[in-house]
Length: 155
Length: 161
Image (cartoon, rainbow over all chains, first blue to last red; front, side):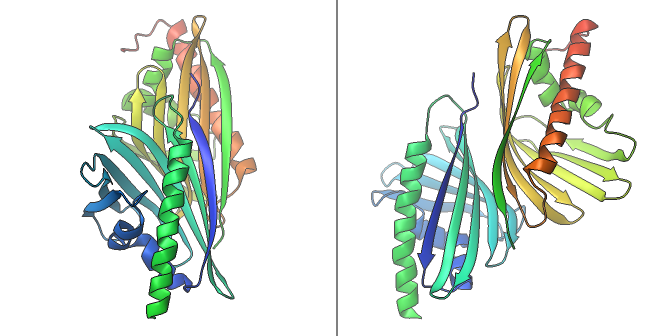
């Protein structure tokens, strides 16, 4: 067998300052708003410790009428408003499907903040899930962009 | 604060069955025996504890005579006997996190032995080193494990499956 690993990266620009973008990225309730992979999907926090290195969160997500997936998040490194590293493991029916190691890098720029995201994927079966994960992140980041624009307008 | 993301791969042909190799990665007593010893005169393992069952966490502290302590805390995600092991871990130098990784180990029968592929996807945090500094250490660890597995099979030591 071969390891089922791959990588993704995204870069986005936001008009918010780093501290405000950091809050949207790391607060569990904010992630409920933007983290769902489509408009038909939901993301609900079931458990969240205080945001800290070693902290743990559990979300439930999926179609609104059947949020069958559980996402376990473990925070590994947190440098306020600069860098966050965490893993997300997706489970369904008690079985682990894949894990991702995600790194957020926030850089102040003249117009706000540049966000660089690197995602390392390790699948727990031979199925290729990279395209699905990319689609989910792309949709989530589009929602984050709208949320950030609203936050900026209200500031 | 800066960071770098890298992926490294280590391949090794091992003259031991996948079942033996798998157990050396996932049985705490067997792993402690090969993992925390024989790291060179400047290194000493000061503690080892934990569970390597799925969902379990291991904690190992190594001390270097000049560089201080390094702590690794693997969290086991998948231990699928005898072909797949996946875990995530953070490495701290003293109190400071320096890397976070996902490690995927694939074991394939090859004759009477095993073809091992270890893929480590790493985020190097500020000052946390580089692929050039990390890869030799990982190759050394895989080599130690391979020698332990081969010795176990040569000695007909029973490694329960």
